[in-house]
Image 1 (cartoon, one colour):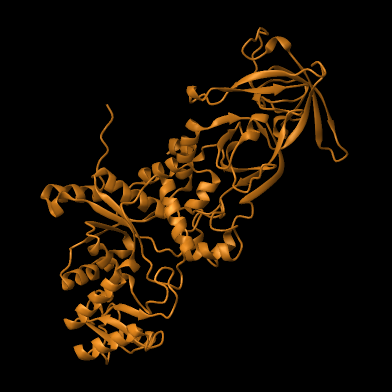
Image 2 (tube, rainbow, N blue to C red):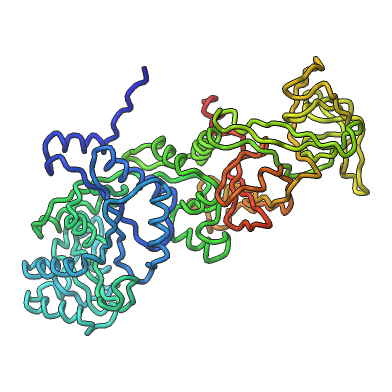
Length: 555
């Protein structure tokens, strides 16, 4: 009998809240991305957490776009985020935008002004910074802190009406310039930005700051458990202060630790640099840690959800080995993908005693892990393509593939013996000559021979051609963001190797965009969106070797 999985600390909080009858036992979460870039694997963990908690406790999860900065936000990012969440297997209760609440947030700001808890400040950003103080010294009051309520109301109305230029005035909360938490030293609530907003157009020229909009938006939606990453733990007192002073629904914030991933970067700013500087081919480049990039590379949504569940929820940040994510990908693909034959680095194999012009058809099992996957037919003739790595002129003792005088089995076909080979003028092997044993046909072998090696092949006469893109880790060091110098200096020059012509078995020519297969002995591959009816392109999703699992066994 398997052990029941223990609760994480967020689940413990929620279950205690349900038992105590808080909010009548209701659970309502939200996922609040800013639409200023594409989501990455870190966001995937947050998505799985917020939507997963809502599902587990029969609650609801909103998708709310934090669209309070028109300078960086675009409808393209909104659409990509929605697509990513749906692809991961989740559906939101309501699609909402902080901009939906601009009028309500403005009214909240007016309420705080009327309570004497907010004021309009003419200080520049530099002046405000100089008055902030330090952890060891208190800040100093702004000379505009003592403005009357009436003057602040007038000035704030003029800010909204567009009377002032960007940066000319701000609205600040009046809390305590000596507070030990620097975030509570009269934080900004509104700034002026004369920029076009992707949804509200030019209706507004003042925009709420995240710290003012976040908690109030949660409250408007009556979110019961507002789950953030750990960097917002110091923002929680301010979150609570606004809610308390406005006397609105008491949403509550909880924090969990983000999980960084080795051999990549997770900062949207750094990812944007990679895109803008053409180090990658867009946000959905299969080397990117974006959800769209991983989807294009062939990572299954189920594997990403399993990865998020495996790394779990914690209160302390750490770096997760990329090998664990690759392990989750392999584990899922092994169960669901058909095994097919494709030759990436070909040399020709000629069966000298096979009848000229004869074609046989062999039955091959699609996936031994899935009996329901059935089988397919593979044509076989005298001339075949095999992998260059499957032949050696002079083989070491424990080499079990082809070499002069050695025998191997051709997958699903016959046992063959190597007799000779040819080279070109540069000394490269071009053709291997073998004899086949007719009595060794797979499934009806009467030869009595046992061979240790099995290699894959594709019939020359029936082969289709395709392109393969062999992706590897984008960076050559484990933690590029924390190395000396520019993180881009550590980009792996071998993160993409393109093979313009590979040979695939005929059945594989029917593959469609997004289809996933295992190229026998070469790795898991996915049909890329760049494919055309005349040319299929396969992305290597992950290699077959499971280094991460081996390391765990050693530990």
